[in-house]
Length: 438
Ligand code: GLU
Image (cartoon, rainbow, N blue to C red):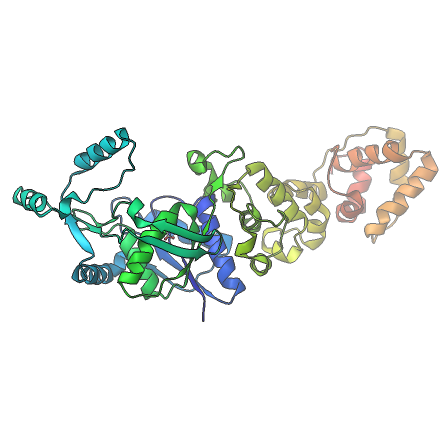
């Protein structure tokens, strides 16, 4: 059996850390097992869906590295939803409803006042009501008639789940203006696209009970379900308030590596430690629903920043070659000092100059300049040279290294000098030790 999953975002906003995690967990699961990852654009809400957001979804998934094995838009598939709807209608499982939003709100308030759950009362099923409302010329919306019996499934994250659909309102499938809401198209597509695993956030658990009844009514196989806990902020607060700052676009613009985002989103809320990884393939090989906990996953931007730095420190040159024109030796010299990849550009000047040296100990600098060995230089040069300078001047430890660093780089801190020195080269080193900008 080929595993087929889908990521089904609505193009009504930018992908944020929460959606990206849904996409990622689907992708990792499918790729681990040689399965297929489909991208389905849930754009039946014509008023809120935009082409720009759809394009952003493609761009952001590509940035994260989540390649898809097929894609479609729901707007292309409306005829399929109509066909599914007519099948439910023929089976007597959908019914027209005539209540206005205001009337439904009033009903819900009355139920709330009596401390009853806000379950739709099926008043439109009463022939007298129906006749009256039809006579008024009201246009219906359409609901699915739930069985009002327990629906159960074995969730790959939550274990056995049972939901009595008597505790829910019959879901609206079609709006008064004829537009399909999410529930039915999603099931029709899942059947049609042979989706056998639905992996999504736990905010969909209740939907699943209704959707299982719809899968069964349409005669499609019911997929397996995995509902993972949602992302929350550091203090457990819902992320929705700060979604803007957590869009993939904003993370990209902040210079976070896609691999760090992926490793972070793959590991938070699981029993695995949050650690740098070299590839999505590595994350896929480690993926297991059994590792996902039942508590919400905490998204802490500072942790992501730290993981980003550690990801860079572990990155081989081959992974950044196109972005580091200064070459491999430079990358190896600077990578351990980076928080963001863009910091490397600022460090390039240490090699190319001009650097205005800071001469802290003129006597030491002069002697050190005189002791500079002839080129070619390599990583051993620094050790041999500083040993010679120490022997000549008696300087040791900080008293030796601090003035040399200040003279060679003009900075208090920076990349390892044994790696930097051969890149700076003899001429510039000599000039800087003499106090010249070079
Ligand atoms: N478009 C739905 C959403 O974004 C898809 C949910 C699902 O995965 O079924 O919530």
